[in-house]
Image 1 (cartoon, helix red, strand yellow):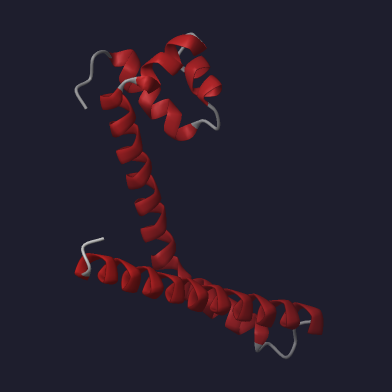
Image 2: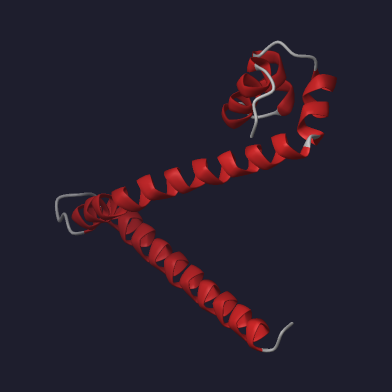
Length: 124
């Protein structure tokens, strides 16, 4: 995105760390109407979307790196005979729930890929 001025770049960064457009605008001291006008600019909106995707990808990479450590901790708690039964049960439930979600999401991805391949082959 060609940066038109420093305020726009600051506003773009603020959008990524503030929960609302209003908060982002306030943090860089621009009027809310100006903020929404800037958001309507296609190059700005495109860059904002690119940076949001990048932030999500970075968070996903971090979590992917930490998931094995988290699973080991849950497994240790689940198998700790000295831990209270409710704690062990909660660990087991967490492990089962997480495994189910991972399997379910993998199935959804497989189905989407199959649909995309079908539409590509049939020109739809």
